[in-house]
View (cartoon, one colour):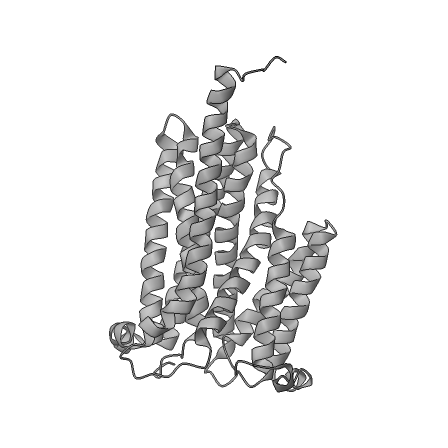
Amino acid sequence: MTLIRPTAGAADADGPARRSATVRAVAVLVLVTEAALVPLLGPSAALDGTGEAAAPGVGGIALLRGVLFAALCVPLGELFVLRLARRLPGAPSERPRSWAPLATGVGFLAALALASVVSTGNLVPHSLGQMDAAGLYDSRDGKLALLEVNAFLLAALCAFARRPAAQVWPLAAVVVAEALRAHPTAEQNPLIGSGLTLVHLTCAALWVGGLLHVLRTIGPWHGHAAGAALLGLYARVAAVLLAALTATGVWSSLRRMPAATLLDQLTTTAYGRTLLAKVILVAVVAVLALWARIRLSRAADPLTAYAPARAEVIALGAVVAVSGLLTALPLPIRWS
């Protein structure tokens, strides 16, 4: 029997592919690890020495919030990048497999778990008998929790039915529900706060999910010129998204921590400490984004921007995890 040995060229071609697969696997492992560790270990560090008391099960709730945010980013980012890709003439027809069915399914489970917490009066349920599902219809938080559960379920059905465009409306409903949930009616001018959160969360989802899907799309194109064009097109939109994120984030922070107390609360409250960590991470992301844009515009091979962009995705994963933690911690006492 004659053995056919692979040629040297084939072996050389397989090497970069294997290395790329290894790098992707490591990146996914890092994302999953940070997504679990930040919410679970963060509350104790944030609350240490502040004298504040967190709600029961704050680590688990923060993890569920982070998962819900990530599940929102993935399908919205895919829809955003698919729209950008259609604007590129001559782009390859190959597209990566959609992660929307998995993401919306996970989002449904996370929203269902969070609704179970709301049904017990924001306590972690230890048995089915403790949950009052019917009682969800009697409170504003309960109705919003149910809206998120149903919206993710509908988005998952659209994703599995291969109707990606139809996901926009249920996913938009999740964003609206999160914006309203974050600002109870007892807050001064809650509609302003909800409007800021609506813009902030939408821009964040498009930025995070969009970059992830851009990198996944460039892979199958194997160095085609459309890859650099897609990354450049995304970069121009991302600059606007970053500006909107910064503006709404600063405004929201000043509403909860007035300028006169801001510096003090950034170090003496759990919310402030976590917000400060988020600001630092966003600054790191901005530096990585700038590095990628410089490579994209000046390097001989624009796709050398892939490496810093991939690091940017990992850093954005940390931002999503910290954002989930931020929503679970007690708000500062002094806020307007």
